[in-house]
Amino acid sequence: MAQYLIHVHSGPDLVNKATLALLVARTAVAEGHAVELFLAADGTHLLNCKAAGEVVGEGTGDLFEHLTALKEAGTCLHVSGMSAKARGYDESLLDGYNAAFAMPTVLLERSAAADVVLCY
Image (cartoon, rainbow, N blue to C red; front, top):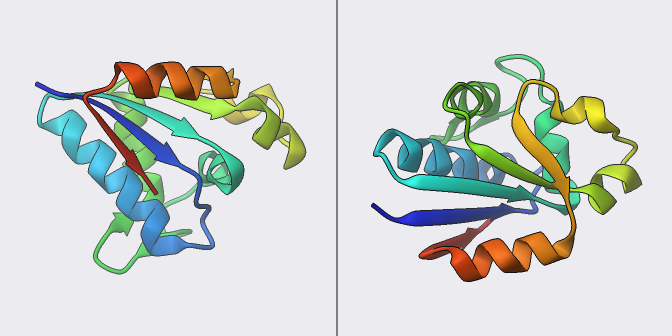
């Protein structure tokens, strides 16, 4: 199985891009691949989705449902601490996720270690 790093820097305003990123992550997890996500820039807003139906892509599904599936699978999330802080988020953004704030060095390290890096 492959090791995927999915770097998401698009926020919920780019509905199809954001939901596609998490649909791809969710699909890879379901197929048994190792998956990590790195959320940066406006991608940090994605973890603020609190209910089904808030962000729904055209053919790419519901952001909340994707997040729930990734949370239940224990998927590792790296969240840019600088991006989150600049957007007014604190540690509570990470509640319930297998997540931690990370610096750009983590993005570089995890990119180098992955078999495949996808960016949305």
